[in-house]
Length: 450
Image (cartoon, rainbow, N blue to C red; front, side):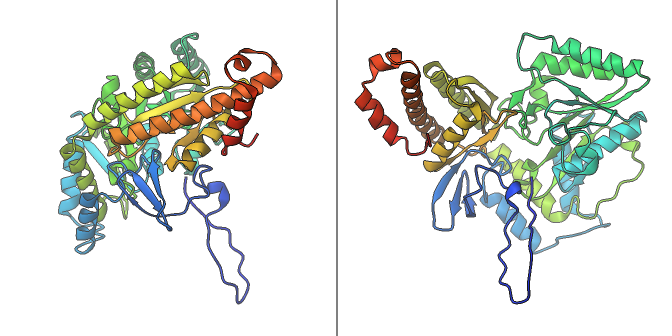
């Protein structure tokens, strides 16, 4: 979520500043990258990795059109606080035109956390209420107000935060549960300010909110005069493969939309879109760096690349190819419990009866990394592979990912059979794999530590 350093310096010391280990992704903790291009990242010694996790580099690492726009603007005007500026006006107009007409007010900020914090303030000022509905396991940002409403990082939530269970399956009536939660809030003399959510709960294991569920939650919240806030930082700008913004594919009408990371292709910028009536509740808002000329030039370039390179349809086609390939693997390997996703936003949930699911998932992640492919690992049990590559990810990249996964899954399945044979001598695995082949197969599993 960011980096900080812990340094102790004595006179004469030579200091190497490194990010604190707890802030490094487990998948990337041993990879030092010094450049990147398109859907690939490179280490100092030139080793190339296929990047299936950097959704922040939305249109591709170091995209030439984005880099050129940034370079040109850097040489002309970097900061114009308090002045009218063409780049700012142009970008706001272009961005607003991509949203439904009612979301006609745009605030430009510098990060997703800042955007979510502003959205929360807008909702509370507009409704004059404090209570917030959130999804279980969600994370909304590192600001104090956002940490308070993020169940994934705050164990003891305050009484104005109300958590809805994630709709994992069809066995429970999650809509009725939400209805009961709202009734309970009202009976306790409280009022709802807003419901805030991502369309895909990445932190909880790439859980996709069902279409009907989201529509009903919006209806329930609006029925008690609360506002609905959607964070599009993962699903926006065409990643869903269905529309430019994910909420459009869901057929819902949010009161406030936040989007960060992707609109700057990794450059620090974010936006909040809302209605004129809600925006008027804030009265005044100032931001020194939000909407600076460089970020706006970059934002315009990103929008143009998404349109010109037809990245929405590409996301749909490549995503469908990956989904079909992963579901074929699911039929072959029982360790794949579920494949879910839309466009180039995918999650693969794993399960195992011989080892903990998180260990199995880690083995597969490490195996892919040993083949120079980077995927994410997430979920409450850390048993979900996440695939969120830059949108320039191609069919050929998809083939590489699928074929490598198939090879590793076969090796893991062979390993499982060896464990099963030890547990149940003479079982099915014994029948189709002689002991000498099992021993040979086990010795070939270089990425598995038994």
